[in-house]
Image (cartoon, rainbow, N blue to C red; front, side, top):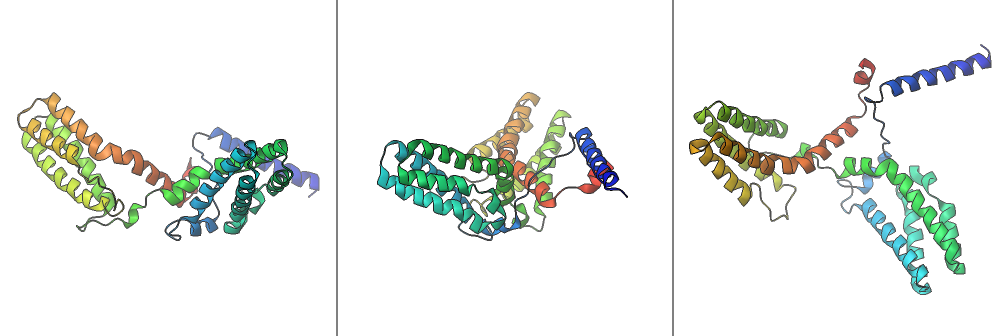
Length: 284
């Protein structure tokens, strides 16, 4: 086979793959997954969350360098530039795979401009460093936060021999059962479902403290308890409108508020952890 034919076939293959992805762009999501070596700087492998602390230091140090360069406080400028240099280069020590992403040339220009007290060159070098940070953040920040900082409910244990995921589904089923029974005038079924929902919510509250150990807020809290009491009363003697309003309030307090934080993050984490579903993509 001639080289021209081989190159043509390669280009054709790339074009076909590109066309397929473009046609199905509503079904294709591409994520840049961070190197596995990053895991050792996050919990649970690292108790101090060292990667986060290094990022926080860099943000603070860049602000300090900019501040003291404009105020001409050179002793403090030297101090913070040295710290910035140390923690910027620390990135490649922690994750060697990201060594090429560092703009070492910009860092060197920053160090020289600080030494020469060259305000203009310093500002340009600092901007270039900031650009290098932003480019990496665009590629990885949301993915890294989802993988390493989203909650992991696989370790949550219930005091009863029920799987956590099944328990959550049961809570949702009870809420819907109350609504259905209320709509159909089945008072006994609605009250019975509410009784089971109350038990499930209490059981759920026992799991929350496994992570929220230092929080003063409890589940169910006072507002939620009062809403449950109001719902129970309305199911017994109130109108459908009163029942619907009380149930809607409880659904927000007991379900939506936590789901808005935890479930979204957990679902995204699950998708990233499982990796691409090639079977579904090929099937599509």
